[in-house]
Image (cartoon, rainbow, N blue to C red; front, side, top):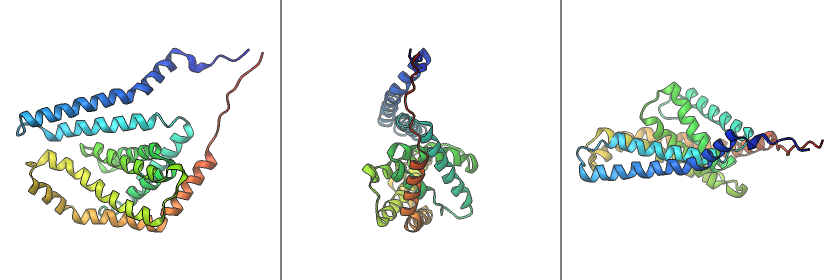
Amino acid sequence: MKRPDPQRGGFHTATEWLRRHLAGLLAGTLVGAGTLLVIRGVTAPREADWGVTSLLVVVAVLMTGIAVAGSRLSTAHQLAVVAALAAFATASRLLFAALPNFKPVTFIVLVAGVALGPAPGFMVGATTGLVSNLFFGHGPWTPWQMLAWGAIGAAGGLMGLDGRRPARWELVLVGGLSAVAFDWFVTLWMYLAFTARTWPALVALYAQGLFFDASHAAATCLFAAVFGTRMVALIGRYRSRTEVVLLPFTEEG
């Protein structure tokens, strides 16, 4: 006689349904928020609260990404690897806190994606933004940072599809561009929330941040050049050595 499968319970069925449909529900929320953004911006461009509305859209995209990526992390081992790398990235951000925007976080998120894949890479990036801001301060910018780092981790995963290992120069190039893209994306929140939303205002914001953008890109390129390929190999070996395969258990009576 086979042992009853505990996964056939009502709670598991409901949880599985929610896991499968959560991405669709959140995507619907995204479409609704985006529609409201467009309608409000067209009908009352001067009265629209672009900061709040854009934040809602970013949160909807972020939650959709988390739902989709999380559904692909099916084992405790995968979750443990994601948590370990997010903790490592958070610690690196704290270690380099005294240096203005010169931190290896973007590099770590990128190579995590290369070594683990798009879904784990996204989760490492998003988790790093959430956890590290417990020390650096949470605010409306947090979802923007989480989404930006998550996208960088997913992009790294695309670079490493089918077991491909990017060359050092590829990690340097993509790392530098990712660092600048991260800063410019997060700056959009300030532009939408606190300015008159004109081209001169946008150019002025980006011009003010050029030093910090260059510092972020330099740090990411430096760490990618020195540690990039070795870091990818190290994470890959750690994943393979700690991976556990559970076989189905049956008991004959």
